[in-house]
Amino acid sequence: MSVLVFPGQGSQFQGMGRRLFDEVTPFLENEQEVDRLLGYSVRQLCLADNDERLRQTRYTQPALYIVNALHYFQATAAGEHPAYLAGHSLGEYTALMAAGAFGLLDGLRLVKMRGELMAEATGGGMAAVLGLSAESVAHVLDEPALAAIDAANFNSPLQTVISGPADKIEQAEAHFLAAGAKRYARLPVSGAFHSRYMIRAADRFSDYLKGFSFRPLRLPVVSNVTGRPYPAGDPDKVIRAFLTAQITRPVLWQESIAWLRQAGERRFSEAGPGQVLSRLIADIEEALTAPSALTS
Image (tube, rainbow, N blue to C red; front, side):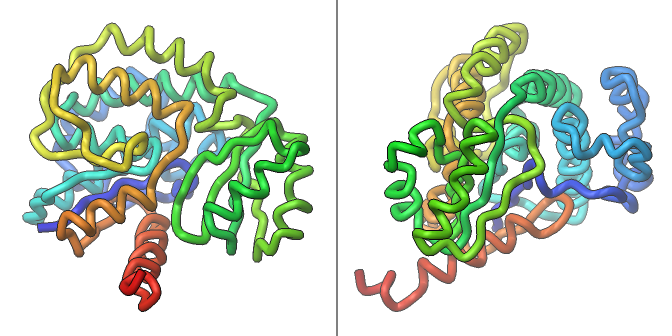
């Protein structure tokens, strides 16, 4: 058994899914409807991207959702039978689709709206802080000058992403480098995702979610919001609440992987373009199995 993990925004690249578009039957059966729903060819976007739209949130999110799904369908056709599913931010939608919460097309409708709403939240920025623990990052963010910034992604023991107004993200660089960060990398986004600044988008998305019904999960999906599997209960209420909260809450990726390891899982397979999550998981596992972690 294994854990299938699905990457989120930042993993996209021109050419992603190239060898899968013509091989994955569930996509081929729905390609015309996918393109009609989006208003453009997702295949053409991923393979050519002549206008560099893959850098834009409203296009990135649907494209990644579809390519993640291609990888999922390929993996299951090859005999993969995961025990758990997890996705990073946008990737959680593919995990929920794979668990049976909704079909491929309803999931696409959700991420299309999510991407459009998040793209409207301009004036923000994000940055990855590398080489500092989450505790050290929190200590720096306690400085009065950085009160407008939130922690957005807890990706690994020494990688935390922060989110806030673009000018504050720019100013924060000097503070983190002074605190010992090895690198401060501003991300190519125009919104302060997974932060207090996404509340309006979350409220509008919550209203949109009311038009969907969700099915019980066939497999456990580990939530970004809690770092634990989605709880039992009415799937309409639970999934709507968690997907709404995910827009403003930080991604607890490190905690999610730690929980899965505590549950006995050791084999993680990345179903999507690139190896971003695989590298993060390797860093998390290295920290969890280090002598200091084993004796603490």
